[in-house]
Image 1 (tube, rainbow, N blue to C red):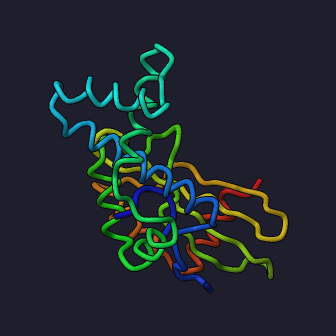
Image 2: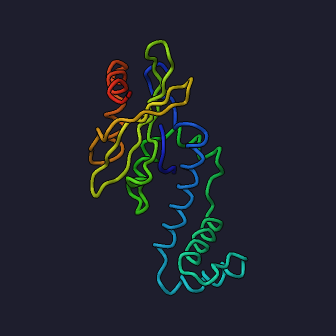
Length: 191
């Protein structure tokens, strides 16, 4: 199952750029490792730390470093799919991946929103991409649209315009917009 970030002429076309996919894949791997740690009984953590140290993943004594090393060790223990397999699954099951992000204790926040969906459209004969960026805010999901001019790579974004009960509802609302609606939002975001 995938986690986090993005899912042409005015329609959805996949999970975002390769860089966004790599970031989402990395976040997925870390979420799975942290999930394993949350499932373990407290008495299993200390032996796992010793195994991580023996494997050369010493945290150097700092609690944050030790935890990061432990998470990386758990990540290596898990039979997680390779990037290409993960991408194929994301393309086939985008809704399941959004629910995975929603169920996680590590859901994206306002400081690091995830690209949930990307759509392409044109405005004034220029190609644009509309990236739906979303995050969990308490019990709701909020989002905005980041517009990217495909020729200049300049980014313009809206204010927070989405508020739904889960990331799937945010994505569905974004997908319901016609191209003319995207153009209207783009105009509101341009200087």
